Image (cartoon, rainbow, N blue to C red; front, side, top):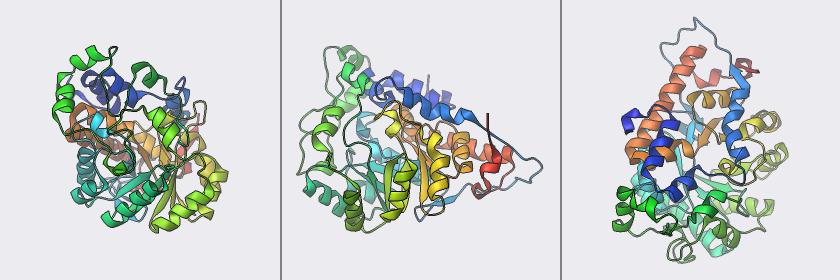
Length: 382
């Protein structure tokens, strides 16, 4: 299988599986516990159908929208994800360049493998920084200050990872950051020579946004589960979020909101946006899918705050259904991570092109010429 054989996001998943050592692939693919919520994130979209109009004159359509004050050519955000150089040697650099080419938002994680400053210098595309609140308050302040200086467009506080979900795939494989070879996985690394040589011969794997504060993840191998459980601040509360919003002073969002009551609290502390998200099904297994909660949250705070539907997006029609239900835009990680692992920047660009074409085709077949025309009248529950 080669890149030209990829015609949807699941094709990229299969190509990534062929190219990655299994512990690395399972880190991307895996969810928490029985992975029920991870599966539901995508299957939730199957519970509603689109209702098209015809004879609508759709020669010219406009897929653009405004997300957190910046124009986006698509109603789509590339969610911040950690450890991207574990998937491809170019990591966040490849994603940033692809996002710029397609005119969409992208984000980098606190646990990114390229620095805040490097990514900021690389692109003028709208970019956000995803903050994990660490117990080390100096580290939190350092990352916020660095983002201010570098000119990031938004700060997104992740609120659903005060402890780690139980990621059983990682427990079985022994996946750590940095990745390390174990007896059980040695054959998988040996039979993926391109990945292994890039990792061994490339620049040292590191998490530069933690420089000067934390050695775990760079100089000291640790599982993501152990990192979250030992490094992140379980005392984080609404006062913490409000304080970070004030300290940042710019466009501010909360990622991981799943209830209407929390959406209302986000409005009250002055957040500009919320991301309805369950962390890709990697935290609380058995929780609701973001799309399941979207209507309820839109009914509570729609029009008062931007609402980004995060998780489970695999098709352009999933993005369109999110917009019909009242979301400002949709976002996801695996929708581009598989493509990054499969073929770097070229892979991410192909994934974005496929989603762009699916969104455009879907809009024409629905009889709409702009994403603003999408509303609940165009949805029916099965």
